[in-house]
Amino acid sequence: MKKEITIVLLSVALSAGVAYLVADKVLSKYEEVNEVKSEIINGKEQPQSAKNSVKNDMTSMDGTYFSDAAEMAVNSVVYVKVVKRARMQSPSSFYDLLFGFNTPKDEVGIGSGVIISDDGYIVTNNHVVSGADDVEVTLYDNTVLPARIIGTDAPTDLALLKIDYKDIQPLETGDSDQLRLGEWVLAIGSPYDLRSTITAGIVSAKGRSFPNYDGTYRIESFIQTDAAVNPGNSGGALVNTNGQLVGINTSIVSLTGSYSGYSFAVPVNIVTKIVDDFLKFGSVQRAVLGISMAETEKGVMVAEVKIDSPAGNGGIRKGDIIKEINLNKVNTPSEVQVQIGKLRPGERAVVTIIRENDQKEIVVNL
Image 1 (cartoon, helix red, strand yellow):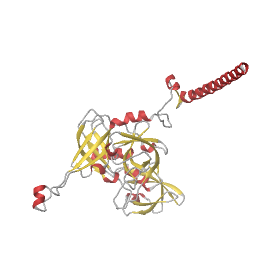
Image 2: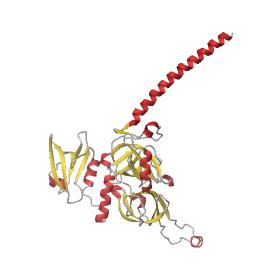
Image 3: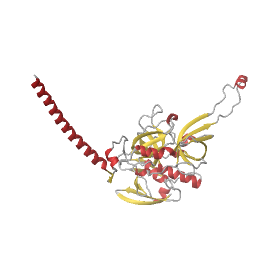
Image 4: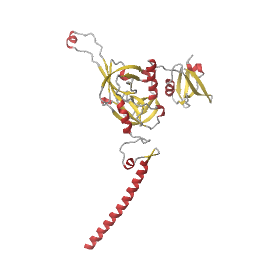
């Protein structure tokens, strides 16, 4: 009996030893693989501490950590509070006068904004501050400051504010034209009054537009993302994984008014032009081609050329297919709007078209 127990124990010990050797070998190989993966990121040798540690941060495809981008950007996003003062009305009865019944109350709205310069300029949405009598912003350190409206532009849903304060951190501007589908982005704002909230998503589409039911003129070439954006995020920042501003969050598509998987931002390249116009001219200087467009399988087709328009005077005809504007490819009418919207009256645009299977370049004086 003692002999049998000894044999069993010996077998167990041998099995454990073999299992240990196998596990040790596998773990060693796993560590080697992990080291190889972490040693080289973007072709650069990483520090030893980075090789041997496990990263809990979710990373983008280029190795930039979300937490780094968030830390770079969050101090540049402000909380915006607007007040629309109630207009006094004559009391309809003695009791209204005596007890204040039916007295109108001030309307209070909230949103977000992005500091874009060290001298106090802040970008937000037009719909956040439209009709406001008073605007105040709260900085990341809870400093509350009055703000004045420098300019508003309904077609792009943008507004420019100004505060008199020096101890601020402007957000570096990126290039929204270089955004790629599937690229990671962060949305920063104050949804439901939850200040400095950060959510992540990817670029789902570019050049998105919505049906224009009310007939008003709008420039629509939104960046579509699946980052969670809710009421209060309007005017906040959309940043890339380098912590650079690539868009201003403006709207969501939802039956409930809350996030349901789709959110939209105005590209920062449009924002930059609008801000420059406000500062240089006091209002937006918007060039026009003078055409109606239709999206077809071949591209953007000129459906109509208005009489005595820049396009007509330049030689663009009905039926032409627009392929590029100033060497920038365009695939939708909204993308044409964006490229022309970057220019001012008096400037020129080189429009590349296809006419009867021939490619032509037409110079248009806007």
